[in-house]
Image (cartoon, rainbow, N blue to C red; front, side):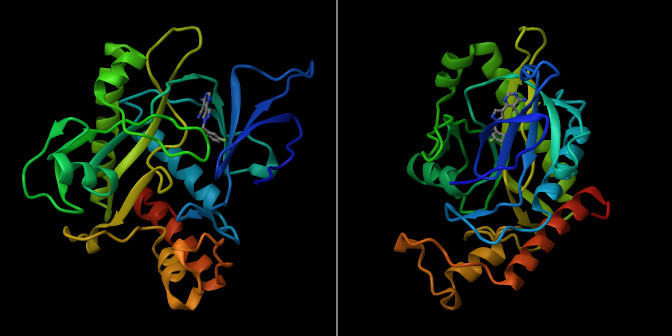
Length: 298
Ligand code: PZK
């Protein structure tokens, strides 16, 4: 059970694993329906467990990275950001956004083969209905990004693959084609930029919404191309044929699975407290990703 901040002038709406959503409260005491405050916490999950302690500055690094990516993508798709003028208690790690009607599909694209995509390829030679060349292995780069949508499962449950026909049934054929095209274009642009800076983006999940009045097309929401929504791999260690190390979570996973932690993934027991050095190394990886990608000092 995760607790959230009390923010004066805002009503708590919802909490995900690592982020919290608030609605501004107007002068009449009613929540403002067309705006939301998206707050990124310093929480970190690994192996489906929440880690303790938190990773200092993680929420701010990811918020600033998302804002930078929204700019890099602004010629492809409009986004939901209204303002970064937010309460002091969450300065740097919150954004005020437009309330959208969110599409009930997780828009995922894959540029490299791993995880669920690899399993499907090994069983069927295709991923989400897209036939792929023979001989691909864990970590192989795909000829071009593939759209691999999933359902949005309730908290605690896992998302399930959707066929493109199911996406068309849920959204209509026109919107489904646009979600597919944009999701793949976002990942392709992400890799053009990140690849030159030593980071591969294996896959990513984006969220789209539409204006509640039905005007206009798809709007990119949530966070975008962060290590929490994507698999980031260090380019210099990329070697197809085995699982790739995670850019951000490698130190946490290595320590948790080492004898030193005394923890077993399959024990069902909560993991132990992360040592200070693992916390600091992990913070440094988030900062490094931000600085490599943006070219700016955090
Ligand atoms: C929205 N989430 C996921 C994010 C959480 C949960 N612009 C928007 N309009 C309406 N709804 C959402 C958004 C966005 N972004 C996003 N759920 C609803 C989410 C952060 C914290 F707890």
